[in-house]
Image (cartoon, rainbow, N blue to C red; front, top):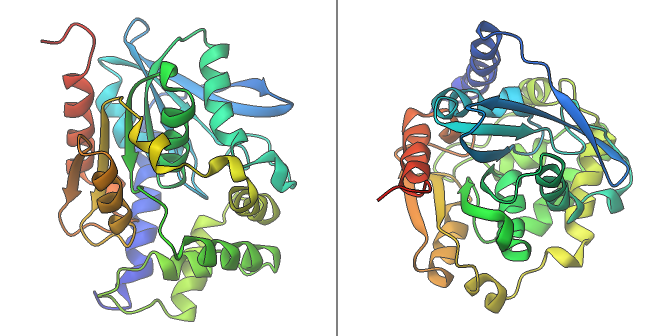
Length: 296
């Protein structure tokens, strides 16, 4: 892909998502207290439908991540989408100890708040990691688990997460993350392109809170899962991954540990584009429909 197209593609995806949402009737979000942190969420769709909880990725929020998915699911499901702590309209602590496993606990507490015993959990990227933690630690709350743009943590993950945290603390944005998520067969983005992408993804975000998210996920030893713990996950699980997403090897590793994991590869998609593709939405809905209660 020519270098000049990289920032244009990201801008298009981001504002297309926001624009489509703007065409919908205004939806008033709600808040609840999750162990002292105010969490924003929206509740949409079929009131008596099976609940689906959506958990977005790093630097994103409900509107930027989930509009196509919400539109596809709202007719048949009760759709709950949350702004993770440190993101969107949720509270943004600067203490790394407020993140890590607490982010998975937020999702479980939201289900408690809504008096929902179990839900289909769907996460993308950072949200996929949160979904994975819920499936491992709170399987009784999970109907199915969908990991979009996420799998087993790769060895190089810690290095680039530390670099991202450092960059955010220095006011330089998420450049190391942009570089890490650029497919290997494509040129690394230039400084000007990184600056343009930073402008988009840092809009409305608190750099210190995002750095704390990274630090918290690096330092919380409770996030580490043994092979035995992973292999004990028995819930139906789907992985949706872009063909050239650098995270894809982590999905391959997870498949080795969970042979029943269903994997759908989005043709020619990368980490940034996969969740906006029609194939992503259709595969997710097909998987959820297959596992709805009462389906034969």
